[in-house]
Length: 331
Image (cartoon, rainbow, N blue to C red; front, side, top):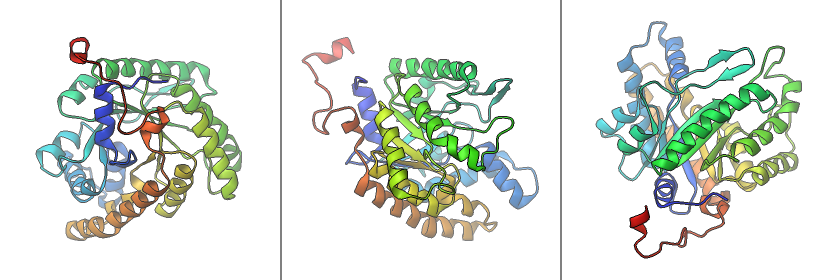
């Protein structure tokens, strides 16, 4: 059982709704966003162009989210300085470098050079997030990834700030991520990953949906798989969107929340089509109508079925931790 501390509680309150549900919009994409814009413009994407897209996303969506996830390269400081991140919206900031290092055994995550937990806390961040490519069946590289998570977790304990971990399964040589064979492996891989990673001192698991809806469509079976994930996760968990289309993400969020998820942390599934709109005025209109409506629909589902984060820790909203007299002396 993770012991909740005052700083972590405050951060979790900042990134969730009053009812303890995470309605979080991810916009910390870097390399993938650059690729999306390049496809549209067929020219090199400048720094300022990416910043502008982040400002547009944050301006339209942050008022309707409990929190947003931004990156230090193009988004976090820029959205604060641009006045588009409301004070009531929580801020998660990613700590990893974009992409990964190739290793003979698999993919290895590295931290962004010159960036740290301490800086995220100092800039007013509500929580720290790390993305790790993870295969529980590749012991050597999994051990490296767990060491990185542990190292960041210890810094988050030191600075008393919540820590979200986003493990992503991937296909290795000889596998096809879109094949029925890989789909058959996916539930066990995602569930075992949840078991291993939530045994570390982290606060929220940002997980993939533990099944491929292109191959498994039986809702009772999907619910059962998500319940298995819920049973092994020692911390609250949210569903990531992994760039699936919006309608599929909607189904995933509903099933996951019915099985114990505390909400969602979605990105491209919510807003990806907006990036393909070349005209700025049309793009902003699409964001402020279609995309906002999507976020509100997802929020409604999460609010209806989601499991408040504090209940996963075995506490209630108005009694999160005992505060003894003169607590601050030992803090």
